[in-house]
Amino acid sequence: MGEIGPSRLNDPILIDECLSPDLAALAQSRGYNSIHVLHRGRRGAKDPDLMPLIRAESFVFVTANGKDFLKLYARETLHPGLIIIVHGNGTAERQIELFALALDEIERNSDITNKLLEVFADGSVVIRDYPEDPGGSHA
Image (cartoon, rainbow, N blue to C red):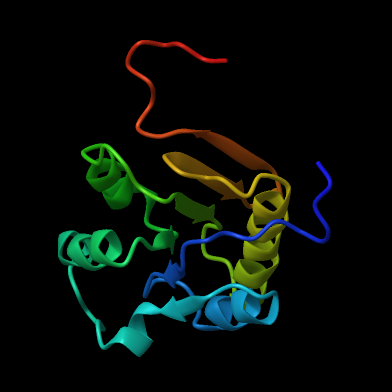
């Protein structure tokens, strides 16, 4: 306790191409180091080709593509965090609303190392270990 103001991630945030670049702007406006894949010159990059960048720069990765990135992250032993926005065919405005909920949750739990944070279309947010602890030991 004793912290003043909201907690902040130490790691930068990378927003996937499948989401609006406005998400990076939202994160920046809230004090986070954030960039969109397009602004890194990675337009059209295949998902596995993004993993070396994500690892090298310790990005928290934000995507709507849970299917592919859950598989990729299942192979990672250590990662700064994966955020999946499950929005269906939501507009950019809806993506921003849902991502704001993710940022709110991060500000309550700043350490999302080896965590999956999912934000659903109904506004619910779920955080869990990912990949899951194979021993099943939870505090």
